[in-house]
Length: 154
Image 1 (cartoon, one colour):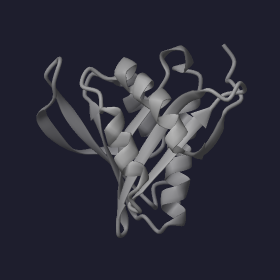
Image 2: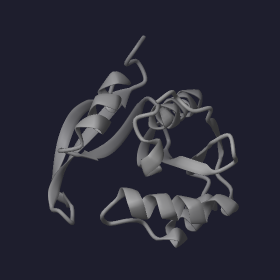
Image 3: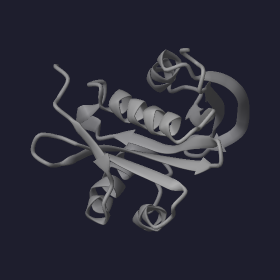
């Protein structure tokens, strides 16, 4: 499959139902739609939606910033669009936005068994700096804490 034509744009309230649907398919312990709506109103959050040629939401990324650090709190791609570059585009967009905002360290958590996501994150300069034991439920699994310094590729 070729990489689709995707536009990354700021999330709007109209995107929330599609995001919640993707969330429910992507995670065993999904965030409720209300969580997405609440984050839209907060100045410390940056929400981006990946939109395909038909205008459909095919992924999203939520980054939370505190001074000069940020966390990718949530990133997901619709099942039919996985392994087609959408997640990479969302991650690259978040990294660029963080860099522009003066973020010097970007963090995220990932299931230890999620080899595909870990490979993507490693390709963007993220390294493991810690572990949260039993962080994920259904099934219970450790989360690896990954960090990317602003100077990862300088």
